[in-house]
Length: 567
Image 1: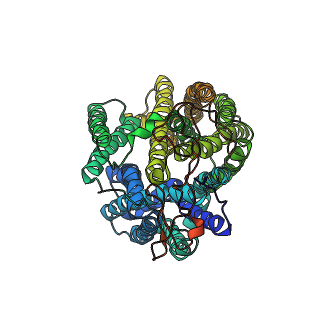
Image 2: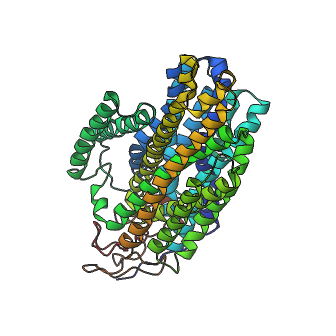
Image 3: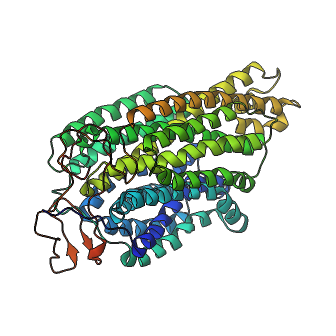
């Protein structure tokens, strides 16, 4: 019996990481860049108010709905193959979106972009998990991956503003084309293929159930942000909950499920998902409110507001890269708890911001928030993916991405709605007499409405509206601070048994020791350059030496669902 040796990544893997980071940056750009293009887009295509909402939301709805399906599909047909199909589709549909001649065509294009985008995130993360078998290298690589998305979000306002100054609104969609071309050319050279060798039939009924579980929930969250608890919101949430129960029950009874519910028996997996979900709630809400504060209260143009978001993005980059390095000496749970404590301080600073303070305090506070985001994105994602066996990396990656999408949506809905409620309450109490009802309705609905109707309001009223919006942000940030402080404490407690990266875990009873080979030496190729493991590991084509052993999941102190794996 021979102990498996984990091979470190070489130049090919690190080059592949650079290629895999490109679509991640692109998806981050897509989150923010369309907000800038909406005014000129609306002037050209003249969509109705409902169509404007669908132009913005169709992408998010479909990407959230298809993440789990695409992650599992990549496990079956090959993660590199799915990534390349998705990149080609994303680039092609982006051209269609850029030259859309009607609002209806653009909505269809945005929906198709969401489906194509759902292939990119889980594929890139699952490939990174397989390419970097060494636990320390994988944690660092995931940190780079997590930072790429934030970099794209930070660059969105700047890049979008520059392009809209020189070109038409459709140009923002064409950013995807060169990225897709580079990926299609470089991926076959730098990225090996991985797929589960015995994955069984694809569960089409499970796909339908997952969509009918996720999409109504996402819709309910977004509708709640706009209309609060009304009948359609509650009905959508209930429909999603019912189908979620049906989906989980079906998956629990299948030999080859879309989602292996046994993963949730691993405390580390479940705790890391919870950290990602709750952590992203605060970030999603604060990102929305800070962006509005910079543009509507401080009066900054989009490009300048984007530049002010640069320092927080840099702090996130440093945290995402640095936290895996620190976690080699300090337990990841402690690192996550400490950075979340810093995020709590950031939220407190944002809760103290006054409408007349300027941008410095906001940028410092949001920088501390982003510092915590960098750590939980890198270490939380690594814990989720590391808890799954190699052949389930796509499914685990998709779960991580789905949770983060829901966290961001919940943050916008819950914290955004809270801030809006405070704003409306304060504005309604101070609405001047004699203001036409239609003007009062617009100004009292949101700060954006107050800015647009300022010329029809009494002098000085806009300053009051800005103070009301700032009070709303302050209130939302107090809630975010309390939740993040609680999450910091729970992270230290629940993840306390997770060992330092690359240094082994707290011993657990019932383990089977280190993973071993079958005694026959290395796996052999089947003659076509594709290497298969003993049935549970990944396959690679091209470079046999790049095939890693299973990633070392970090123990939670409780026997997980995969005894005998490299835990």
